[in-house]
Image (cartoon, rainbow, N blue to C red; front, top):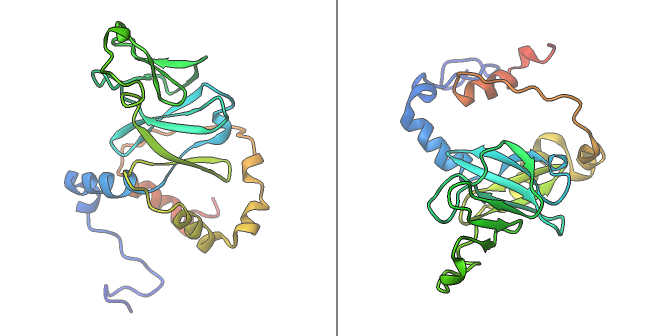
Length: 209
């Protein structure tokens, strides 16, 4: 028996407040989703330069795109001028740049400010300093991972966690996950705390179904 009074085979459910308390949820947003590495999109969703997706990470909207050098870039989806949302679409493709719908401040695929009304008359506005606020990114196993923290934890910690559950990196990479194609994508809008979804997915009684 454990200290909870349950047999070792059973894991206690969290108290109800863990699923309903707004304060708990705010702490989770700050210390989990906005501080740790987050698996954001499939690399294949960014097929070429200018392809983008917007993703909600914690309380922030994040713009993920592929630059002309094929690197993946991610930014807070916020214009540096007046804080308007830069991209309102969930996905799409731009030719060369992202333009804010509010005052037309324009940023290239690396986040640099490249144009704005009367920008030439504002020599004190640095095009680099007033570029989009970047977010740390990594590509692994065919996915793009992002971290909003100012000082992201080592990505090796993510790899170690995956290895601890699934085996050594060589065995995992032999699956060729990055070469798989998405056959179908189903999106559910569930009115429930995120932990209920995770716990339901991890419930072994559901494995057979």
